[in-house]
Image (cartoon, rainbow, N blue to C red; front, side, top):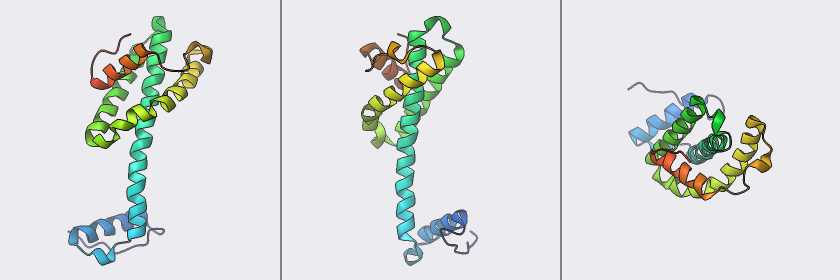
Length: 151
């Protein structure tokens, strides 16, 4: 393994990250930039939470579009549902501790999805219920579970 010259966090992030990884692997803990390492680890957790919310929102947008414009439901819409559900499922497999956030984030994701679905369909936002209907929640859960998501 090649030695990586240390670099400051603010000067060259990639080199800093490589040098921190090398120090960790070698057990040279005194060389660690603990404050910035902790910040980066926290940022990784926030990134996963943001990704989950984003994917839940995209899933909900397309489920709403299929539910309220079934005659216009395209393969692309259905493909997006399958893709987002698959990515959510994989994210949860990699980080099971995110599973409770699915339910916690559902309200935020649904509210954002209502506005986005209205913008994309041209339907008034009032067309979409303020709270997800039970059939919508079942369709989302089936999609995330890898099953048929039809309403």
